[in-house]
Length: 421
Image 1 (tube, one colour):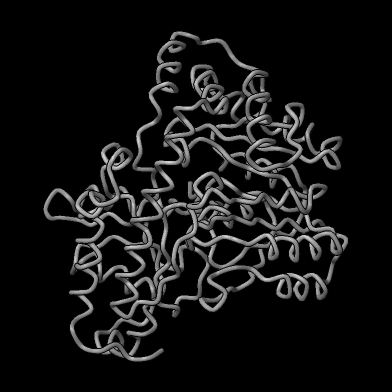
Image 2: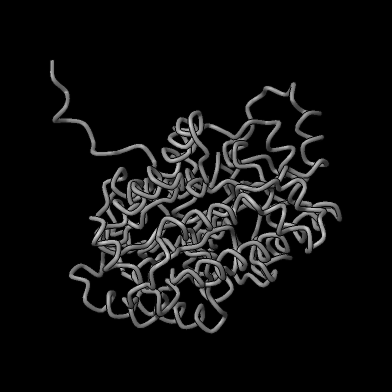
């Protein structure tokens, strides 16, 4: 029996695949691991202590999430973001990734609008849910931000405006590392409101805004914004798989029962020990506050140094504003790369890995056209535990694996002057 023609065209997540490939290559050579975006920082000790304390708890938790955790998460975001999070409208899931998919799965049909570049899993999730996908291409000139004018133009020309339009907006951005100002968010919110766009605002990196100035879209478009977040980035607990989502009051009556239905038929609940630990993290005690402040200081310093080094090598790179990513553009080297048979971002990243041991993710993974010579660089290959408590003057040495990798890119490009794009 052949089942091939009936299988969905869903591939292995490229962010996870590059990590596995780096593991394999590292057995025979040094690999500069810029491909996988995992927090380098240890989970705060007060949070891990609670996980250990409750390790023996094995009972199912409520599908929506433990009440005390939902209360803590709601209070945390009311304080941190100045938004009206209420525990009755918080859903806890095994990572924000599955919460985003739950929203898409709750609709029988919808159009999903994505920004290029944007995180690798949004489009496969939309297609798994049976939805059509559209993309709006951003540029280096706007530092990879969606503009209100772009969104308005797209919405105005939709053939079926009665069909739900779900925009997934992620900021600070993966892969860009850039974010939106208050003015930019207000302009986008005006367009969203006019066209009744449903927005999944993926703010998983919000707490890692390098200046602590993240602004939630829900401040400006509360009636149409579902906000997702979790512990994987700011609390260093990616493998714990704990995400939260807040549903706006205007949508909760119809949407929340469907989301709970999806949750009950898929993940049932998040592990009890993890939920107890997460409640402590969201209570955001002084030790956790100091931890987050340390993360921001380290990531800002190393990220800006890395962007500066890339720009000095003729690789245009926007300075990071949050998270731990850069999105370098090699267009300035296009002609010289073409002489070496490199015309696409996939070819660029493949050759960098093979010849320089530098693991990057190509722009195509994030919805960029193949001929755009862009890639994502995740600058997390340093000892986060040491970096958290180190003075700034010591971070250069701590970040040596990052800087060595950037030097490897520069050496691979060669010494000739870059050609203007």
